[in-house]
Image (cartoon, rainbow, N blue to C red):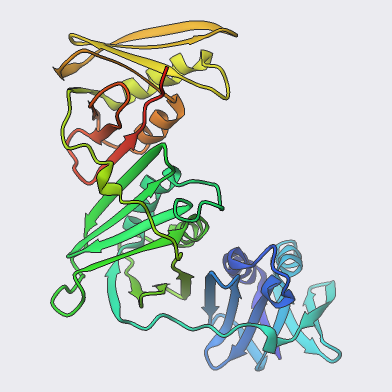
Length: 373
């Protein structure tokens, strides 16, 4: 195998697929990137057997086809620091590969290509097309609510639900939950099942979000699902991720069916108030209190270490007066994802889940549990 490629292009491709490389696998092949050159140009593959990323380019000068397996960390570091010039990769004898760029030269050991797993794309049993910008925006609106504890597999991810033409994403960590949904015009409900639900790992969701970040509103991303694997194709990049075999909680049981108190106020005003008042909250056990009376919301915090703080905000109120306490970080996370100028908070009681919605939009909601004080 021997080929030449520009350093900038090569470094971009390597960095893209290296996100799927396993950092803890006992199998050396899973710590590598597979490089294949032939009629389809240059193809790079990496996987940890849960997430698979393939990217390719024809902006390459192929002198001899072939394939080779190189440690991802070392080649990513080398290529990133090469001059912005032409890079030549040449396979040598004794399981080595030579990398040359201007006056720089490296010889690296390779692994057996046969040890690298075979990519098995999902069969197109269920497929549709959507904008990568829309999917990334939906992921961003919910994934902050997923648990970061990898032991809790059923909460360490984002639940994907497709019902009719509606794509719905939900994430929860036991203390809060975020839900967003969009209508997908390209979903063909006449020939495909009307309901699908599956769980993706938080790691896979984060990597997919980074990969599709370069996509634009005009781009069309192909999505396929076969009951076990989800596949996404955007330009010359192909991502496959396994579903997580864990049961996501019944999120519909958490959704409030009514309210005793509802308040509406400017989103940014509430965000900044909580941010200021929360400064004196004790780190590690942060608590702010919301006191609702008439058309006034008092946001306050008291700490035995630092003192106290409070602010009063004008609100529109329906229902009863209320006093309730929260972790301020949970509220700030939710408010930071709301693009509407006004936000609505609906309360059932001081110990019941509270719902946060954009004032005019019905496709995003956040549920947060209060703190018992």
